[in-house]
Length: 454
View 1 (cartoon, rainbow, N blue to C red):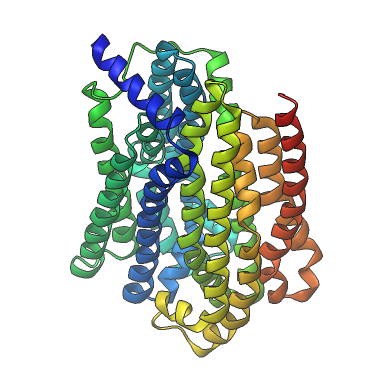
View 2 (view 1 turned 180 degrees about the horizontal axis):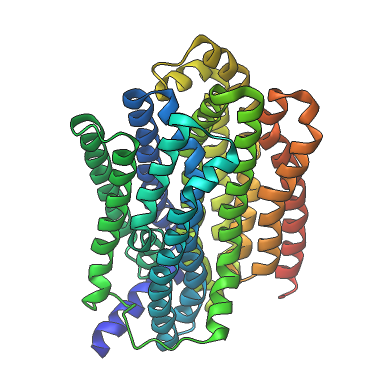
């Protein structure tokens, strides 16, 4: 066992400390991005299946409910990202005992928190939809969608952490293969339940939830069998450890939670101003951007173990070099989406809603063009937050996350209200501009601190 541990340790050191930064970027970021792309394409396919097979009302219901589903999954992301930072730093410093304890506590924490949040979502689903003003079939479909996800949340939430654990152990391709498996399994099961068994939005939710849960269990097998450097040990919980995990994961968690709160408020405003059609158009916008957002997140997230490992080993020079490559790649990805949304609004709308009326198509045209402006700059705030998180500057990362996905959008929601629907479509571009200004200031300050050894 000791020889196996030493072999794993040497493998990680070669990968994270001695691989050239550009080569390391492609070794880690490319599989990470493809992994997230597979998940993103399945999310798009999920929207296509619902929109094409079940119609615009079901599509609007899914979009109305999805922010609350993501809120539950954000718990898995909180613990997954929050534990990955101290685990990577501990391994870089050679403290394997601490790394294994954090890993074990994190997995148990996700299961317990997933069960608690899932139960709350099940109980609150009807009240949530009533508060948003949803009625009739729209409300009924949304409640079913929420409750199916709530049932599977304890295990399915694990999938949002296993990626990080596999990459920390140097199993970058394993993470990629697991996500590809999840996407293919989910697509087959969801399509079968909706098309052949006519299970409606409940079938759509069950297909994705099953794929997440089953893939999470598959991903845990090598850890349970002791084949990787991280392994389960007798857990030693403490308030200090819980705070450390929460602090490190809080930026990602707040980004998810605050972003969903903003989406809920925007959906309510859209429902009031433009009715079901406006909610459906916003859903198309979210699904279209859903291809690129995971790519950006995957590129940043894939290199966080490398950044943490190098930080723990005292190699700040390599940390900076790795981050420069992350920023450049994310800029190219983000601008590409912006151009696609600007040029093909009608095609993207029809992709998700085959029965889209002329009123929906007329609304979607300006919505996509306005919304596309955000992605010329969207990459910079995301990369900045990820950079701060990876080097354990969780407090400024958390505050920035709150500003970029909650404060700035809510201020924009109020200030742009006189513009009606166009003001709602402008919400993300306006918030992104404000966040970009703050991100530039943060990066200038961080560069100064790193030069001064702080």
